[in-house]
Amino acid sequence: MTQSIATTHTVTVGTGPVSFDDVVAVARHGAAVVIAEESLAEVRRTRSVIEALADDVIPHYGVSTGFGALATRHIPVELRAQLQRSLVRSHAAGSGPEVEREVVRALMLLRISTLATGRTGIREETLQTYVAMLNAGITPVVHEYGSLGCSGDLAPLSHCALALMGEGVVRDVLGERMATAEAFAAAGITPVELREKEGLALINGTDGMLGQLVLAITDLRALLTVADITAAMSVEGQLGTDDVFAADLHALRPQPGQAKSAENLRNLMRDSGIRESHRDPEACTRVQDAYSLRCSPQVAGAVRDTVEYAAQVAGFELASAVDNPVVTPDGRVESNGNFHGAPVAYVLDFLAIVAADLASISERRTDRFLDVTRSHGLNAFLADDPGVDSGHMIAQYTQAAIVSEMKRLAAPASVDSIPSSAMQEDHVSMGWSAARKLRRSVDGLTRVLAVELLTAARALDLRAPLEPAPATAAVVRALREAGAPAPGTDRFLAPEIETAVQLVASGAVVSAAEAVTGPLS
Image (cartoon, rainbow, N blue to C red; front, top):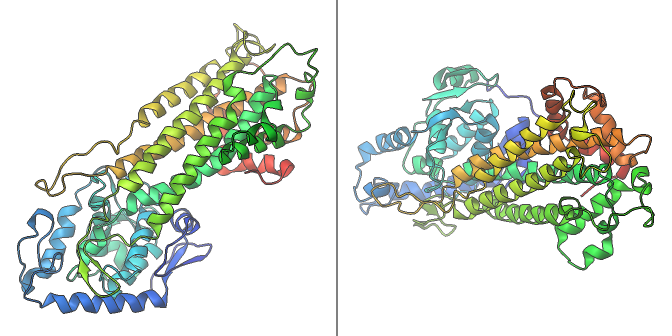
């Protein structure tokens, strides 16, 4: 009997696309997968098309020929099983560190989704074995390097196909690294002996880059709300104005993301005692806040709109059946170029650019707290006793180092191409590389926002007896309850930063604010 990992629910994969929520549920939360009966019927129907071609005297790519630059060779029937094994073994040529478990599980689900469309000509038993491997929590070891993003993510997908054959190395449900044969035996799974066309069906796809895109969009959507929260705390803590966030001002420039961000800032700063302390224009000599404060919704809003464009592209790709050749609904077997990762690669690069800029404006807001010429009455570096204490001086260094790294990561991978396969594959997308660097960027943004959170919370505390807004006060309280102490003399700061990182990543920061404001955009 097949072992299954703990699940919260089951994802049913049919002939249509899986959703973002489905990808996250399987990749991160161990949801099980079942194949809809409509898909199984279509898989059986199109497999019969492939089997009818197998005995044809006319060569058919991927069925009775070699692959890539070797596609001109006709392969006799007795060598075709060896052809499929050789394809997978030779293409499982990745190198470098292991890719994260959630990325591999997302990749596997998305390949299953394409197989379930019936457009690949795979056998039902091969598809079901792939599902069994995923549901048993068996995760093939996939490596950092090996994919050029065309024809799709060949090397990463080949490592998964190799496991399906009972070969290679995997990690079991407990994370133990072992031979695939051992893991399959323990889970009661019988390895697959691949037949005509199945090797190509298992490895020709954009699933690796797409899975990482979906996970990144999910994370960035959450981080954008955090960015509005930390921006509100910084505007408030630096005695800035919320007048510039008025709805009628943003209606003059009807960018949808900007309007949402400005609305969040208004809600977060509502009823702020700190803001009310300097609302009287006769008592406040400041005419305009710096751009990093005043233009927060313009920058964060543009990031929002870019993320939603990327989500639209991801939605198109989730609805795609990427393979070469494909079995068309009317029964033709046709070669095509849909495996090229350009659409996904471009938006992965776009997201790395906007993540870097969002981190950059966050770092600038943080830096203003630490400079006595710009902090409006706060101690240098928010130190308890400046000179004896350094306060958050080096926390900002850490932030700046991350932002600098993110700027380098924003250099697009998709503008590069390096020819391969004896010039048959002479233009590639580098989408996998774009996805890998975006994951680093998302992690970097999480950490940069965490440092702004920690610094802004300290500043709000130092504005006492003035009271912050109820929403921002709730966030400060959550930070203190999680173990980041109130202002005082210098102490080991790294654990406090990690506490803030975990609060940002877990959603606790947003939850604390929304307990006061209601749902934020």
